[in-house]
Amino acid sequence: MVIWQAELSALMSALAYAAVALALVRLFRERDAATLGSRRWLIAGVLAAEAMLQAILLLGLLQGWQGAAAALPLAAAAGQLVIGISLWPLLAGIKTRFARAMGRRIRQQVERANTEATTANTWLELAEEAAQFGHWQVDLASQEFIWSAAMYRLHGVTPDEFIPTLESVLALFHPHDRKTFSGNLALAMAGGGDFEVKLRLRRPDTELRHVVMRGRALGKTMFAGVLVDVTTQHQAEARLREANAVALQANAALREMTFEDDLTGISNRRQFDLSLVHEFKRAVRSSLPLGLVLIDLDHFQAYNETYGQAAGDACLRRVAQAIKSVPRRTGDVVARHGGGQIAVLLPLADGKGAARVASVILAAVQALRIPHAGTETGILTISCGAAAFTGVADLNNPQELVRRADQALYKAKTDGRDRVMKFDKTMNGDLREFYNPPMAQDMERFIKSRVS
Image 1 (cartoon, one colour):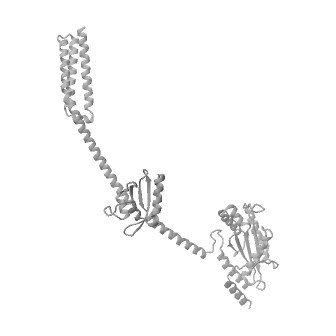
Image 2 (cartoon, rainbow, N blue to C red; image 1 turned 45 degrees about the vertical axis):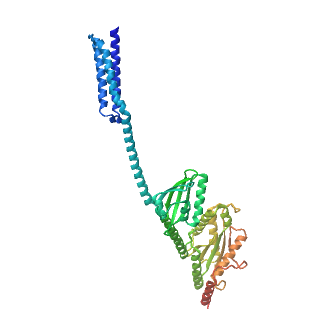
């Protein structure tokens, strides 16, 4: 019984020493355990040796060695003494050593963080300098401003000569922009969130810079944000606006010099005027007829009011192109006469010929079937007035030819629209001027010279 108890005691002691030795070995392999020095391996070795001694005694008991049972308590006591003596200096110095190790690690981490922060600040400064912006932070309660170096550079001041306060910062802005900035700041303070405002910055060297300030509320009185210099962009936009204005003026002048209407693609009024004078002179010289048809879109104003201006422009283009596509003689001119009115000048056509051409045009427009809710037929229609020059005894200037075509058009309108009306002398109406007096007088002198 005693031997069996000794065997069990030796087995338990050996397992205990081995477990402690393995645990210490695992502990000593950790990174921070290096601060304990070489003694950690000595302690582990002693524990391992004690575990081996217990195992030998256990083996001796199993083999029936004399004295093994008596030596077992002595070996256990000796092992415990060795463990106590070995662990005491280890445990006594572990706190100090681990504290030193942690201190070194913390210092290394702080140094690394400082290096990264310095690098990040350097990158930020380079970015601010390249992109012309600076960052800022302000606590309105304490009037404490934090400006980056780029902020001072953008404002044209140095930290030594300028102390940023709300009053001193506002004083640098254009007088008309100070209220805008203060208002946006007050709104952001009341409701939180972000704000953005365009400002003009007048630097101490009198240079005017255009900037955009963007900010965000970090609390009731704390704000942070950036100030971006957009002067170059503003100047480029101003130059672009000037260039666009010049281009528009040039285009307008070019349109006046050209002979095509930019909306409909047919000839414009300038081309019509020149062609009318030229063809009238040729008709007088050759004693040949000259026909004219004036065309007006019925209820066109109502069409624009119903469908919109863009739809009205598209409708006018379709009608103009349909009129232009009607087969005509070489030399005929289709031109926009003004608003929704189109003129067709027909050399060699008398009154009947002009009326026939007008009837073909009327049918061509009807075939388009353009919807128009403001008409009885439900589609867009036109009215046409036809007139012709047949000799100087009856008509002696182009102005009168246009007036007669207009009288016929007026008659077509009053008789119900969607029809062609040819001028006859029984028609009366207001005599409207279409050309300036010098042109009419010049034409009258030309005709008198030809007649005489």
